[in-house]
Image (cartoon, rainbow over all chains, first blue to last red; front, side, top):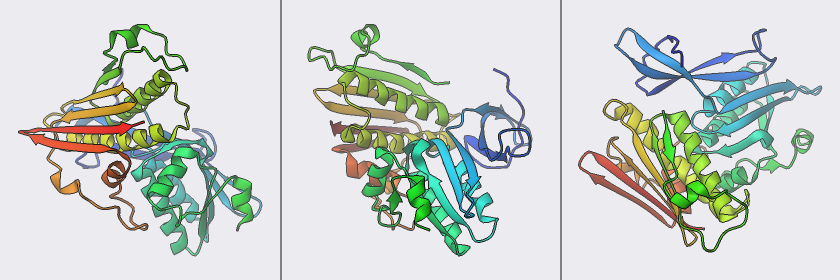
Length: 166
Length: 159
């Protein structure tokens, strides 16, 4: 496997996460991807990394009513959560955000993934917006119950139901 | 690189079907984990194999709870071993299913984590700190032992 050289941000972690929006002609419109570079070795000034597998992609679309629908796909876990955070940050830049996170494509969520959803809620509310969750699978519903976050995030069976609630 | 193998001879040779076999040998899986992303893939893969071997559907609540706890502890172990372990030392992972009881273990050379074990579930607005609390809540047993420079984790759930 080839080992491209990546920039070093000075984070004392085994893996360092770089994010890039690919909606600039280099990828699918609205697709965000997180690039996870694994440290292979090297000194303080020059370190070698390789691109590792990512667990989450996020598609973004805007409805006619001006609601942003983010559709993560994959595992919303410790490796995937930064991608969702980045997508939410982009969505919030548009002004007063109304956001639906369509969880249909999320196969698994962990506590870090939940943290990214809580961070998203804080971000949109601080911008006078609001957020709805839609279509969680059973694992996601179980984790929301376990953590009592189902009281913070009432979720909807479909995106359409969530959109209708705004 | 993640090295994995199912150590039960029978689990290597039998095709994995959706029907549980009452005469089946205990299901066993072993992997050596060195990277967070591959390591998590391997943990989820091992639970998929356990599901197939035990004939449990994808929405089986007890398996979901076990997998959730496994991912929480596994990611903690991989992250802290990577940050603080000597030269990114590997994590040994074992999973066993016997008589409807799933038992997973991790052995790693990360820092000791005694002070995190009893952490309560944080407030709903908190963005972090739920991992071990979730694991403790859903497992029948969450064991941790520091032995010299080595951490030993044991996760048990009756399915």
